[in-house]
Length: 192
Ligand SMILES: Nc1ncnc2c1ncn2[C@@H]1O[C@H](COP(=O)(O)OP(=O)(O)OP(=O)(O)O)[C@@H](O)[C@H]1O
Image (tube, rainbow, N blue to C red; front, side):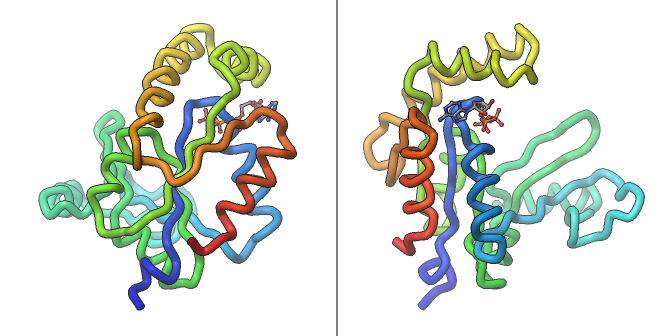
């Protein structure tokens, strides 16, 4: 059986403020040894005690771009003069350690994962409505007014995309927290 079959990665997607962190934190608390996150690549220099292969895979710009050309990244982006990315191999590494890899990504990332051989399971976490999402983003008090406007516009795109047939295996509406948590947990711990 392939690793991917035995330990399929889980992609969790949904608008900013839909509650991904809330449910993921709870999942990791309840199952500390069962799930894991992939280690990203970066071209920036390590800081302080950071070690290659622990916090990041630290690589040269040349090696990074080579891996891009080889199609080795699920997603990558440039921030300032540095590149960051999630490699297909980094996701496989988590499965090899007998953990289920969780990818918390937005819709462009979802499209990219679909193109790989990772055989992931896809979960869409959604707010009950745009109005409630707006209230939660304000309630979180971490975003500027501009950021909230941007997030709400992007949320509409994400929710539209999530309607595409066959993209998500499961849609959870994060209305009542405990009810959503029960569904979230059930999806993540089930093998199929
Ligand atoms: N079911 C719920 N009912 C009420 N409030 C909720 C619920 N789920 C999450 N929240 C609150 O909504 C806010 C947004 O949740 P959270 O930060 O988990 O979203 P997120 O999807 O991780 O966002 P981002 O993608 O920006 O990191 C938080 O303040 C959180 O406490």
